[in-house]
Length: 159
Image (cartoon, rainbow, N blue to C red; front, side):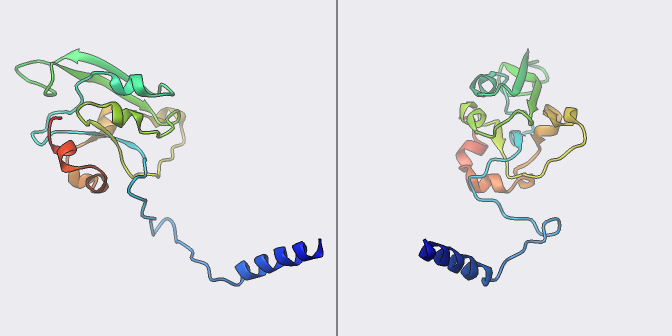
């Protein structure tokens, strides 16, 4: 029994003598791994149309039911997306989300992706319900980490 105590003390002393690395958090941000899944983003096509066609597959795939999508018919004269329909309402409750990535796997056009943003805090629970306007990303330059994770074919083409 005494040998186990000595062995435990030796491990404690050995680790206490090592140098530590402290990250100055607000000023210095940690770089997240390539597969990290953070806050959601809704992508647009190069021509500015929304990728989301309002199919509701992301909502059906979500295990915690945190995504709400309401579809509407697309106006042929002034289209919102390339499909016959578009998402008139797209909301994600980030407090319920478990960041599993099923929504981005279910999306047939690659509209919803999970970015690297890990900082989100608010003073009111209602502010964690992100609407379509909060999630839309105008260009890929706004979220460069997505190019490292996704192939160009999935991000730039209608698949």
